[in-house]
Image 1: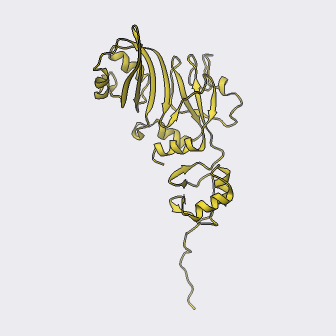
Image 2: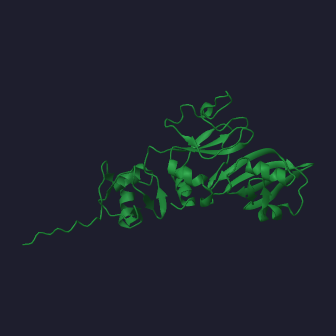
Image 3: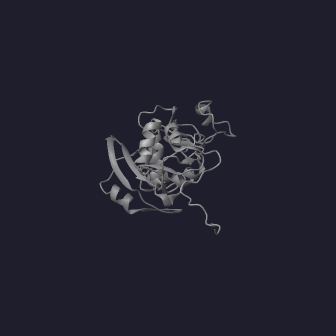
Length: 256
């Protein structure tokens, strides 16, 4: 009988350090192992673009897993943290000038070494994401992925009616044009106003420079969201771990 030299069908590749898929899903908080087995049986789980099957093994450190189309981060070495950065704190883990830094607030509450996703200048406050996921960090910061960031700004008033249209159309700055994705006046009080604007730009001091250019310098600036992640009621100086759903939403925001 002739020898069959055909390669075996690559239905379920097994990697070094691989574990049963239902165990990996359960460890990531999807549900009990029995519930995870049911998800696999119902073809609601994919691994590296392939519909998973019962009995599959995966390496949680490298596998790209989706459940009902949403990316699941199964590698427990990766951490995702939200922080409400106070005013006066520089966005660095170690400041050579001795200023207040992020490490003072994180302390030993996060065992892994994490890095900030983008920056907030020392005079600005609000939502800051920290993670050791370098790939996701790059995508969140790169303008081509169009991840919106929303800010609440206290500015000099009064606000003219056409300001929103002007910002939506675009304003020329010294390093190129910039336009917002949304703008609204939240409140007015005497000669000051509170406005909310969203944009996917990431240039240095972009919100302050933009509003100063149109005649409304910023006296206070708070970032309230990055993509699907909201600041919410997180108190100043506090941090919290992102939920599995929030991490999945971040992956979805960058097309993963």
